[in-house]
Image (tube, rainbow, N blue to C red; front, side):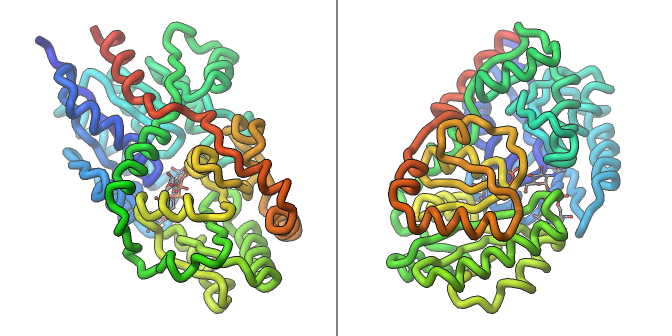
Amino acid sequence: MKKFTVFVILGTRPEAIKMAPLIIQLNKNENFICKVVSTGQHKEMLKQVFTFFKIKVDFELNVMTKNQTLSSLSQKIILGLDKLFLNNKPDLIYVHGDTTTSMVSSLVAFYHQIKIAHIEAGLRTNNLLSPFPEEANRKINGVLANLHFAPTENAKKSLIKENTEKSKIFVTGNTVIDALFLTKNKLKSNNELTFDNGLKLKSLKDKKIILVTGHRRENIGEGFISICKALKTIANRHEQVHIVFPVHLNPNVKDVVFKYLSQVNNITLTSPFSYPEFVNIMSASYLILTDSGGVQEEAPSLGVPVLVMRDTTERPEAVEAGTVKLVGANCDRIVDEVSLLLTNKKYYFDMSKSSNPYGDGEACKKIISQTIDFLT
Ligand code: UD1
Ligand code: UDP
């Protein structure tokens, strides 16, 4: 039997989390020889994911530098992948979502006439500057891909609107739900989970935990200053809350957050959590404030309300389900919305209904089955 050689290419934390269940299943499937290519766009935050999911990297490009620019990052990935594909040509590559890693990988694979499968295809805000540069990245991936794995019907509609060939689009759900379910199962069998960075969840058991993450380029500068001011006001105004903020390693985020928030009593700033730690604390949280894409998909499944500190979202399904709300990065708006969720029980109850608009945990199975049909 002929085996298909496929490369799973990833570089950032969310790509690794969302590709991990696919790598695990491809490795078990006798139709495939699966190789993992890491661009190393992220370093420490990527390693955390590899360690937890026991992912072995076959090709490492190791491109990350401190405060990298989009152009220098792209240039290094282009050169690294070009060299790799000259010596190792797979039947197909999998890329994910909208990062520089995924967009550049599609481009280089296209130059080498290698087939491309795009996972998490069809997400759109229809605003090229928000999120920047991700909206452009995912559109470019859409133009170059041979297979489009859309997480939702809505994403499929967006692809069709752009004249993507219908027969190449498959609605699979988002693989992040596969990763979440896998992790929750592992957590169930390991009640002893402790936090590497010393955080003690038990000591917060009488508090309402507000979990915060943030990293979007559009929020860097004014946006993060405004977010930090809002968090300080919330912490001072509501004694019953404890804010837990695992800070992204981007120096443009880290420096501002530590400058404004490191001295506030009921705010804990930590280094990024490993994925199981993060899933654990998401589940224990009263509400989540974030500008992250992945967190908007995971939290509804856990029944935790999310306020999104952005003006746009490419994930409208949970907003429509009423469990996620866009609040932007405006200080007063964030303070008001959090206060409402802390004080209005009915409002809180309505937002904390669990819903699963992003998948049923079977996305990877569907992706693998469609890939076999396509390659055969
Ligand atoms: C990238 C993705 C974004 C994704 C995010 C997930 C692009 C254009 N952006 O943004 O879509 O949502 O990852 O987090 O691809 N750093 C470290 N160690 C790490 C990771 C980052 O030190 O493990 C620092 C480095 O100084 C690096 C900087 O963060 O230069 C920015 O990293 P980069 O990948 O360029 O951008 P992100 O904002 O993380
Ligand atoms: N996450 C994590 N540790 C943290 C914060 C987030 O493992 O300290 C996970 C989170 O559960 C989600 C993913 O990282 O699956 C989101 O990554 P990020 O916000 O960096 O990127 P985005 O989803 O916005 O592309």
